[in-house]
Image 1 (tube, one colour):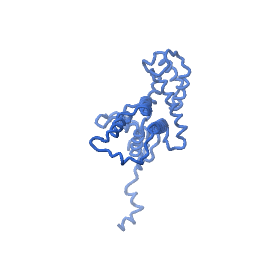
Image 2 (cartoon, helix red, strand yellow; image 1 turned 180 degrees about the horizontal axis):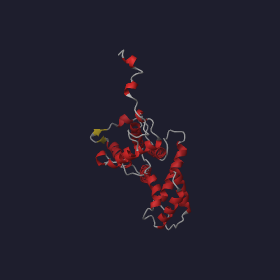
Image 3 (cartoon, one colour; image 1 turned 60 degrees about the vertical axis):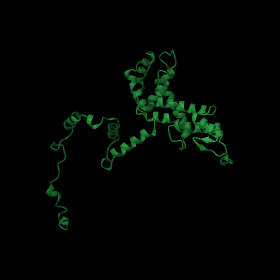
Image 4 (cartoon, one colour; image 1 turned 90 degrees about the horizontal axis):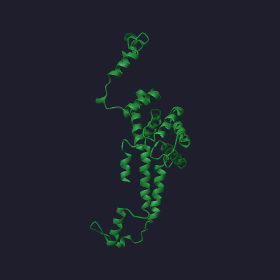
Length: 263
């Protein structure tokens, strides 16, 4: 499980690869029901010898304790891993059981973009795969008509190259957050961007700022001149005739001048 945790924290991890690694880890736990792991073997041998790494084990101290049913323990662990990891929502939510099936459906739709999982010797048009592709396009609100032709080209070349008109859905799939850490970083960045001073930002502009904060280059690699030039040429300047003029400072103070005299 430690190897799985490290793999899921990588920046380049994508959902299909994460699903493969999680399945592999769950299968490893399932096999422990019949064959104990390295550390469990070490503990069992130490109990038989009555010594664990130089520490004497007193058999009398374990009397009256209930012995763990290892197959049942591992099966319970597998069930909990599946309910927590193979879902689109938290396991303690009321709809978690139905969401588990939804997650399996999503993964099966994504698998059609994996050349290693496509059926052998399939020819285009592959209607079963196109039906899943259409559902995938609906999820990401992409145009299925333009992407379908790219998918057929992808099938014809055996997955050797991703056509240009198929890349939007591939990019959308690869951008899905795999762990809650990705979501937490996004919410943390949103709290910094959506401050009380900027509370009037629209969704489109907020999304652009979040994208720049999460994906954009560091400051020392960013060349701001093109953006500053575009801002100056496309936005209103202070001397523009359509810009609102600043009120006269002398006139601004007249309404409160009597009150200010008290201070």
